[in-house]
Length: 301
Image (cartoon, rainbow, N blue to C red):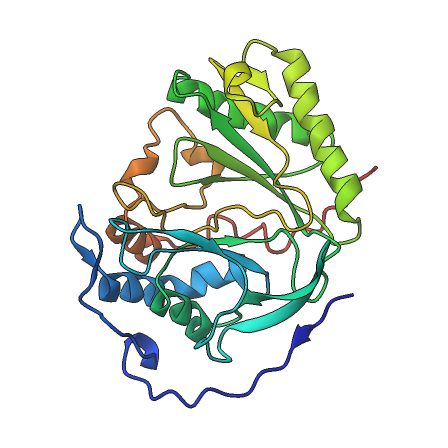
């Protein structure tokens, strides 16, 4: 089993939000909104207590845009020179050998990701101290552009209902895009391959019931007019956008965890901006996923 590597403490002098250094704070990272690197850091500093529940101690894939969305962005999952010990490393076995992946476990680490120009954070479905056993399932509902939003909402509720038929509770999340995620917490007892096959069976069952509405084929031509039920998020090394993460897209949207009562045709994911999400969290009396963290569900394979 892979184990996190111990790191030395950083000696970088603090100077930014939450005492973290922040270079080029006035650099505009979302030009259309005029949002700067400092704005982004302040958002993540404010949202850290909620977001860390979703990403702490999980290997991460990052979308880094060091000069903002108007310039080149790229994926990264390995540490680079200059990252302090606030960004931890975990050894992961790949086909070509063993390498380090990054993860964080506190607000300092989260803000250092922002210091390195991160605009999107995508965690694994398993934790750094138990990589081989996922503790959540994700059904990614990815609609063809021709599919109306009302149909995506109906699809999310259909996934929820099918999961309830087999005794599993689920939780919805916007993705910062045109789809929705339906997420299921599970006990980390089953390895990735049977988990992936279980999710494939759920997706194929829904497709068999409504073949004109759903597909499990990622081909663009097959997906026309349908919703792609992406079960491939449930595999070793696969990731999905984190709750409360920004997206490197027009409008600077944020992925947001929801209650099922909010999943209606009136839901407008584009309204979840940085400012709106900060206000939403301040107003919330309880975490919309509060039961997610205490549920003890087992897959019956």
